Each structure stands twice: as structure tokens, then as C-alpha cells.
Image 1: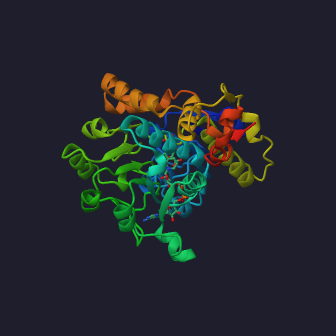
Image 2 (image 1 turned 90 degrees about the vertical axis):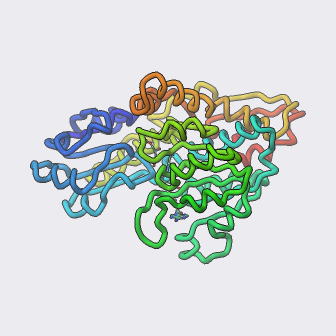
Length: 384
Ligand SMILES: NC(=O)C1=CN([C@@H]2O[C@H](COP(=O)(O)OP(=O)(O)OC[C@H]3O[C@@H](n4cnc5c(N)ncnc54)[C@H](O)[C@@H]3O)[C@@H](O)[C@H]2O)C=CC1
Ligand SMILES: O=C(O)C(=O)[C@H](O)COP(=O)(O)O
């Protein structure tokens, strides 16, 4: 059995090596020709598997029988076309959701420090309350931050209590966090969910964070709003036209990162492992390898905090001990200016440094810091 795996899938040798002959290829180079003698394909979000690619691969006699994407999002895969050709499909729901929440909290606390405000003073609107948005809501509520949630598909299924409309969030929230999938059609389409009109309606002082999909926000309208009065703040991890993103928008975003919100090693390996177990199930084989067999020891696993910092300062410090979002912003600016946008964007992702999740850190609190114990646990920290 021949297994083709995107070059940026960690843990592939350990997971897929025992199941067949492994071949690696950069995700953007996986096309119909590459699928010629392949039985199993393991990808991430940058490989577009549309109907034309799949039809062409099948016309060339491809033996492809299983496709797995080690990501949460599935908009890069035409699942109907896969089904039409009898090719099984698996994705990795929730795999990197905690990493995205770390990215969101790290970004908010970084901007709070830079702009001189406190998270506790802000009301956060979460658009898309699934694996990512739901975890974000839980962690924010546990530390007493007021949240409004917008998720019309869930409101339709579960009843409207606990949900608000997007327009209410725009009217009433200081921070808007987008965690929606890219859906191009239907009653809950998210393409340009934040269109020119909604972007114009954002109140001065609003902070907009998009870690869902780039096409959910009208990039040209966002650039116009940011370059006009400059009275709102944007944190953008995802972009229209990735990796050829708009350099003007990159420069206007307070935090600009190359689609890495979910790129913790834990999140990536969880994604690989979820696809490994799905493939084993598909093949009728036992999944012998556990996720813990893949995860290495964290370089920073324990911090001792004696006191003297307030709760938000403590959380910022702990987040930065495992992951500093400013590093990814700096690296996108530096590499995209040095290598050009497309090569620079992809270089940041291909050479992504080791990053662990907040939950891998255990915090020991001295007596002076113990008042923050419950708050810090709510924020996602493990206490000794
Ligand atoms: N930047 C990054 O590195 C990452 C980005 N993502 C993106 O984030 C998206 C969300 O991830 P999860 O929460 O795990 O997915 P999920 O499927 O668990 O949740 C998505 C939620 O969005 C809701 N939704 C759908 N249409 C909506 C609309 N029109 N308005 C408001 N809500 C709507 C759904 O009902 C669902 O509850 C993924 O589809 C993926 O595109 C995911 C992981 C990492
Ligand atoms: O899981 C998803 O969905 C994501 O957006 C991924 O975290 C993105 O990772 P890459 O596919 O860009 O490596």
C-alpha cells in the first residue's frame, strides 16, 4: 500500500510507516498526477482536493481509496466528489481547538498590554461556537469575562436561548472572535460573513480577531476600514487568497500571523493520530500507537509563581512561557519581506518552531499568588 503524506504532517513515519510505503510531498504540490499510484492520501488544509482534481486522478487510473485531512476545517476537500468515486474520507474534529484558544487568549492579552486595557473590562462576542468557539467561551466564562455567542445553526437545532444574532454582537461587544468554517452556500453561508456593511458598522475601539477562514471576512473592506480612521484593531491569522495575502492588510493588522493559530505540536500530532486511527478502522486493523507515544516531553513543563502579579499578568506570562504570539507576527513580517509573500508565508509554516499548549504547563503557586488559583485553573492552567 502506498501512502502519500503532506511534508508538514508530524508523526507520520511512526503512524503510517508500519501500514505501508510512505512518500512525502509539499502539500501545495499534491495534484492529480501525484495521486497516480497512491492508495492513501494524508493532507492538511493547503491541498485542494476539488472535483476536477479527483476526476482527473481517477481518469489517470488512481487507486486512491482513503483520504484523511489532519485538520479541523474541511473546505479544501470536495467530499461529494470523494463519495462519488467511492473514496473514504476522515477529518480531525477538535484536534487543534485548544491551540486556537491559546492563540486567542495570547493575542488579547498582548493587545491589552500594548493598548493599556484589561481583559476583564471587555465583552467578547464569539461567532461560531463549535469545538474552538465553545472552548473559548468556557475558558472566558470561567475567568469572569462577559461573552455573547452567535451560532445560528446551533440556535436552530438547540433553541435560541444562549445565542444572539451577529448584529447584536456587533452592537454590544468590544471584541469579536470569528471561529466559523468556510461555507459558500446555504442559509448559514459564511463567505464574507463580515462584509463591507458589517465592517463599516463596527464601533470605534472594536477588536476583530479572525482565526476561522480568511474568506469569512471581506479583506478589501477590512483594509479600507483599517487604513481609514484606523479606529478598530484587527488580529488576522487567516486571509483571503492565502498564501498570496494582501501586504497592505498584513501591515494594518495589529497581529498578523500565517494561519498558525492551531499549530501547536499537540494539535498537529492529535490531528495525525486521529487520521491514523480512522485509517486503521478503514483497513480493519488495530490502532496500536497511542497519542502519548508521539508527544515528546515539553521544554517548559513547570513554573513557580511567588506572587506580585495580578491574574491577567500571570496568565500572560504563562502563555508566553509556552507560546508567544508576537513571535509569529514578527516572523510573518520578516519572512514575507525577505522572501516575498508566498514563499515567506509558507516558510514560516514549514519551519514552525516547537510550540506546546497551555495545558502542558503545571503552575506552582506560592502563598502570595494563591488567591488567583481558581481563576488560573479556569483559564486552562494546571496547578501543582
Ligand atoms: N486558524 C487556524 O489555525 C484554525 C482554523 N480553524 C477553522 O475554524 C473553524 C471552526 O473550527 P471548530 O470550532 O473546530 O469547528 P466546529 O465545526 O466544531 O464549529 C464551527 C461552528 O460554527 C458554526 N457556524 C456555522 N455557520 C455559522 C454562521 N453562519 N454563523 C455563526 N456560526 C456558524 C457551526 O454551527 C459550528 O458550531 C474550522 O472550520 C476551521 O475552518 C480550525 C482550526 C485551526
Ligand atoms: O485545522 C484546521 O482547520 C486548520 O486551519 C489548521 O490548523 C491549519 O493547518 P494547515 O493545514 O495550514 O497546516
